[in-house]
Amino acid sequence: MAHPSVEELLAKMRSAREAGGANQASAEQLRQNRELVAACPAFTPNLLELARLLLLTDEPGVDASQAFSEIQRLLEQAVRASSRSAPSLLELAHFTDSIRNDPDEAERLFEESAATALGSLEGAWSALINLWTVRNRRETLEKALELGARAEKLFPDSAGIHADVARARSFAAHMGLIPDENS
Image (cartoon, rainbow, N blue to C red; front, side, top):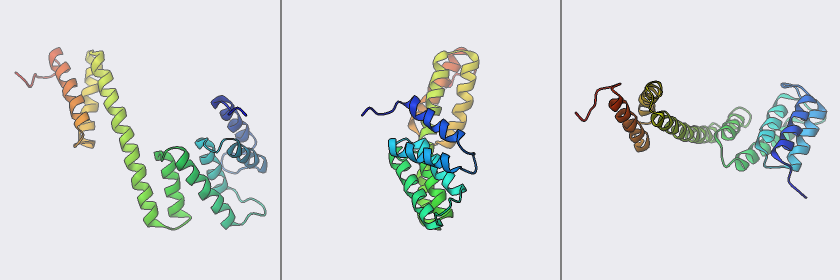
């Protein structure tokens, strides 16, 4: 059996959304989201959406402990399927804190989510500084220098950020935008 394409998965998720509301799911919407989980248990956007909908919806005949068990399973599955992505960790941390009332575990998850997000931010800012530097135009070098100043404050121990900013400063000095520190 062929795995559904990304386009097919997104179309099924859209169809499920159209079957209910954003803040109160219909039985049909939950059925479609659950079918999508069964068809593709690693499709993280659907796992997170179904967990969120289940938190907001009182299903007839389902007690809170059953619902919370399903939500926790979905969130843990999203964390695994996403290789511990920051958004998935954040959702599980909120659930762990507010529903499971486990602040110690929630704190660990929040910290991991923040560290993962910061790692992504550092990589993105480094790439932007480099992109703007290589373009070597006044406006892009000014943007690289401005972002570089923010990046150095947020990531003071990052050798990569410091190297990127030094390169941007060198290009900017060569263009006469800032004084040349080597003269």
